Image (cartoon, rainbow, N blue to C red; front, side, top):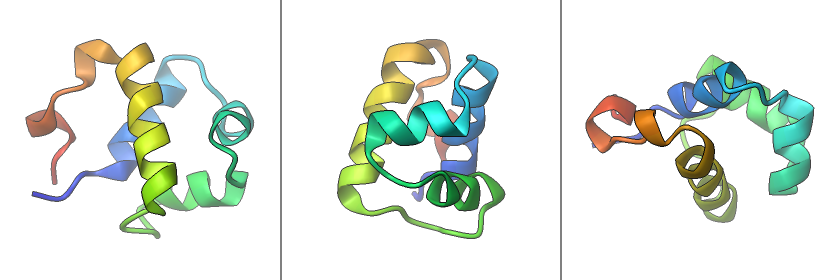
Length: 71
């Protein structure tokens, strides 16, 4: 099963995080996050993906379920 990175990024937005804030926390560009949110990028760099999932788990724990985040 592949993760739906758009769901991950959009859940963080709904939790109150801007792309700028998340990109600073992850050390990536806002453009990368925007492309993930729009589904233009299917898979982020490994380190970005792990950091994004860690942030999602910490702030969106109620939505951090593999079945819900899958495509």
